[in-house]
Length: 350
Image (cartoon, rainbow, N blue to C red; front, top):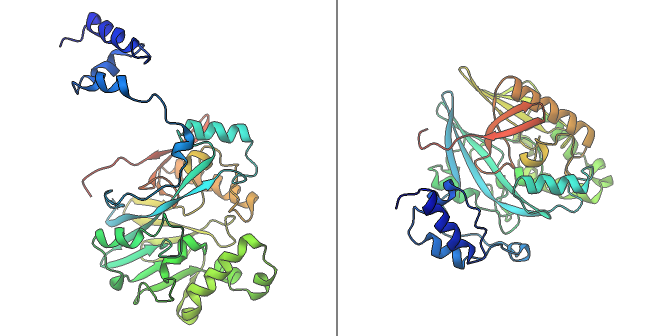
């Protein structure tokens, strides 16, 4: 068929009889023409999915592609490993975000306006012959829609028995839970575990635990469950220290007292591994002054977020976030209207 004005007008006329908006564009008609049955399908398709239906308890598909993605930072091979997701109610999630602005931010990101699909993605680094994990996911200690990390890790060709180092950003259960299963067994038997010294000092303090508000108690408990059997073997590091070759600790407090980001450097290439400095980019990169309920020191968390976003934008660093949409890596663009997260382009080439 020749897609001239008369042909497009005929399609619009046909669509108008079905109740579908006839003001389609030439481009959309051309796209629809790729399949002969498209117009017929449009005539019977529902125009909108009621949100109540999409808000039902999610189930994990058994036939999705594995959740891993490889890319390079200089000579270092980085593999993003996804651990699944959890639906987080937006009620009270960002206490200092005006309700109308939060709803608009979610709409602008084409996300539900009452719940946030919170994803969990850590990275595996191949530095020379060394396998280094930065955070570990939940293992079998999280919500039912998580726990995909080990399957994706193995499918990516890794073996937990050969992991050399585990570097932890902070002690929230979704970051340290993967070190030890619910039954107490260690997941990575030969790995050296490295943790921020400020984080260790806070969460291993029994006096603080005794006075902790309810929201902090799961982290105190997870700290003892995960690290208790190997307290003497855990190495602590300070901000500014090269934890393992090519990976340097960057202080990023506020989310937790010792929350740490990492600068991965190889040759002239660098990536800022930001952990939980910014939660979902559609909310916290676009609105760095907002603070999630998880941020223990909201003011400090916002200050750190702005500092990190400025650094990433000014130096055109590649960044990765633990809770960004998979594969959770990209760049930060700063403009007149604030910051924006630009995801990396998918590539079959590593």
